[in-house]
Length: 260
Image (cartoon, one colour):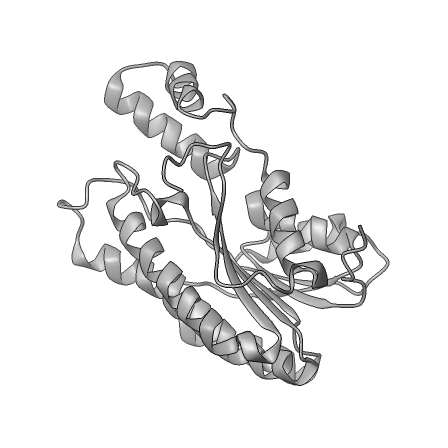
């Protein structure tokens, strides 16, 4: 299937590891010119060197804990270089823990890093998408928007806010050929999953292998996802072929989520 992505421009956030990096690689393989965004310049340079060489890929150094700096850097890049047809919003999740014991500051920090920054990027990029009559905004969030996950109180709360922001934006932008969708990862083989497994091991007294196996057994597929499997779903939603898919929450979780 020709995804009709050749010569498109994409901004991929959190793109030096995990799902973000896999997405950058998948889009680049389809002929997309990718601009990476993350806070560590050394990791950005290393990832840039791994991308296919046929396009002039680039990067922006920005920290999602500082939304004003992110806004300044992205707007300056657009003014100097080009806009983007594709925006992949993706950043690390909040620390785990019961919601009742969470500090107010934890909610504020997560709201800033996820919803505020997503909104800032959308406002910066959508004008170009409107002119091109083509836009794809894909938010990488969590299956917790369908089924809250135990021990992830702050994350459950903020992910739900992002999902509702996304659905509202999809309703407003659909008329311009712009779609807005959410990809909901289940347990995926990333650094964050390793930390979750370690936390479960520490709390239960089980070995990390036992804790990981218990998590796998809760998934009908009996395994964790590979980052590349999430990247494939994101790439399809970014394509011209997905032009009539808008405003959805797509779980990519091996069937773990029990709701429809």
